[in-house]
Picture 1 (cartoon, helix red, strand yellow):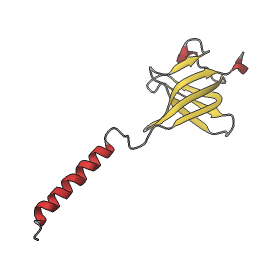
Picture 2 (spheres, rainbow, N blue to C red):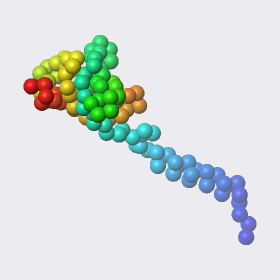
Picture 3 (tube, rainbow, N blue to C red):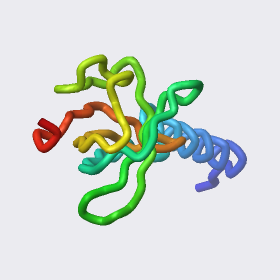
Length: 112
């Protein structure tokens, strides 16, 4: 029995390429991982980046979060404009290719 290697090889390459495209369709290279940090607001940048930095209470690490129109603010009158340096907050967010994005920012009850 004789196998036509040219056609067989081309068919295998086409099937492999189609499988690779299908496997990667709709799946980002880096999945958005959820994050949760509690800490004090260190600074806020409202021009251009709409971001703020906090110092994590547990680790002492500093994190910068961007906000967007989907970010929800709880117990912070005025939302993003109501964030103040020194305010204790809890931030839920996700990783993004260019940093952290806040999905929910809540003022800690210790501020009351």
